[in-house]
Image 1: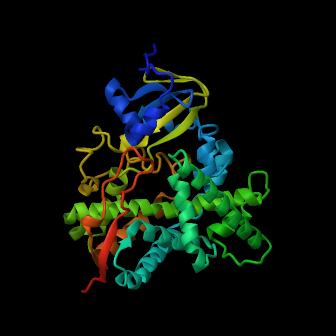
Image 2 (image 1 turned 180 degrees about the vertical axis):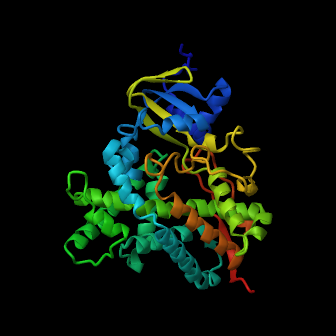
Image 3 (image 1 turned 90 degrees about the vertical axis):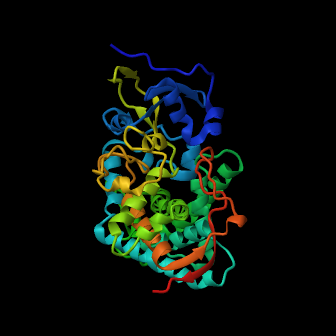
Amino acid sequence: MTNEVPREKVLDNSLSLLKEGYLFIQNRCRQFQSDIFQTRLMGEKVTCISGEEAAKVFYDNERFQRKGASPKRVQKTLFGEKAIQSMDGEAHKHRKLLFMSLMTPDGVKKLGELTTVQWQDRVGKWEQMERVVLFDEAQEILCRVACEWAGVPLKEAEVKQRASDFGAMVDAFGAVGPRHWEGRKARKRAEAWIEEIIEQIRNEKLDSPEGTAAYAMAWHRELDGKTLDKHMAAVELINVLRPLVAIATYITFGALALHEHPECRQKVTKDNQDYTAMLVQEIRRFYPFGPFLGARVRNDFTWNGNQFRKGQLVLLDVYGTNHDSRLWEQPDEFRPERFRNWKGGLFDLIPQGGGDYYQTHRCPGEWVTIEAMKVSMAFLTNQIEYDVPLSEQDLSYSLVRMPSLPKSRFIISNVRRKTK
């Protein structure tokens, strides 16, 4: 026996999606009192699902595939065309191992150390500045970190442009019009730059150390034994660099959390690293990052009495699951302590996807994201002091704009080193 899935009686709801942003799926789940409903987006019938049980189904590789799920406009800005995000089966597992090989404990530790050094190197400059836009600075810092960690040479004169391009790719994923076109232009520039680096590595004109992402992408062999073509190697190397720069969004929201919850700042100490970890997880849960994820039904199946047809597009509500009151007590309150007894579920906290890292499409960079955030929060609390000039900025953020960010990108002033 199958259930009748709630359906929106509309010709197309794309405009409502743009108007409601992160809350689009959550609003309808509440309206229908259901974790599943159907609507139409971009002229196509789409099923939307939300919650932990929905995430478990969504990450079942026997039921869902990623091929054909990501719109071309997203591939041409955020992911790159034919990249790992659109792969399935053995080919995806093989490519995923390439990314996971970079996420060793030593590799994650090294990225954290590089991040700390880059933050410290900026303090002298900030002390001479009247105002510092934290998001912009974080993007440039993380661009330097990403390139050094990945073995990609980066000239000082091009840091600002490269950081801006990586940021534009991220900013374009939920955009139409100028933001989208900026993202496409940014990707073309980045791909041309990284393709040249891949070529230099292969021609031995550039010494890229073994174990770095640049080396790994340049020499990776697919299941057929062939190396990736120059363009695809560049696309996948960008899929290492771009997400690292995107951590600037989380760090900016983290600074906002420290400002709005000063009691949290006092608990982030060298002797309380457990609390720092809890703070980072709550930042990732609470603040908006990715709104939803898409996949297509691989084969017909029934879930909770609801019929899913082969080829059907399904969207998993990421933001709504991270704010699901069945999973999180008082989900709209910022409470890092909620993670004190958290069991580390694979499908409840899903800001970067859910499931097993090796078997599903969960983001392989989640570990380095957490590490970079931990050292960044420790830096902002333990190593510097600063003012937050409220009269000069708007710290509000929109749940309509995707991706979201505090409107003023978090301005700080009177930066000084913290005395012991």
